[in-house]
Image 1: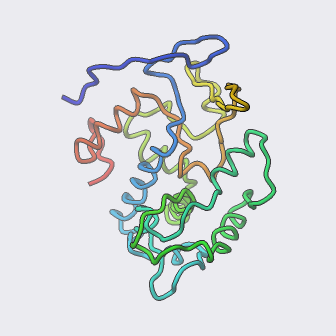
Image 2: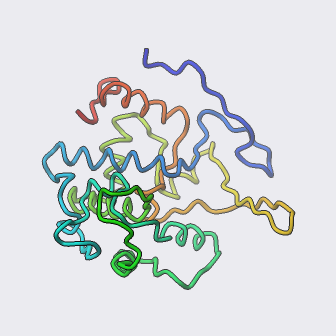
Length: 242
């Protein structure tokens, strides 16, 4: 009946202080964020501001692929562009944790487009033929959301999705996350020479990570999102999508 019947936190949200996790603890939800990005795209499609079968090049300077069989928004949504993973997200995440590489330009949107457009030799198939998980595709979708809506991606999601669903603590922003009293501590778990080490890490608060995997939320707030999903886009008095 649209109510949470069981919720519990397991383990510690901070190992050093052994603080318990709770159903309200904010965690990075990783690539579950992609469903919010897809929802935003479908909202804009419902408003007639884009069509999911539009070529990506209609909105962004994407040059990779075949002009006669272009990569569309739908291909990015479904990881069927024919482009395999290009390592952009991994690069940003490691840089944010001071593990540096020199191989991939990853600081500006121009860098992102340079990296993707320069990967023509990486294209494995025509669009819609095979599934290749592509974080960069969702970074492009985030940019399309910004250009079509006229709002920053994180603001659009907050105003059009999180607020109507009363997900008021969920955020993409470092300053909002750090002022909350019930938050996770990220960790790197590594095994070297048979010895496991666990060290505190940094959540990747970066624009390139927002749309593919940057949302921070809690079990209880995600339950609101689940209710809306189970009820054809309706949560309480809000309807976020037909």
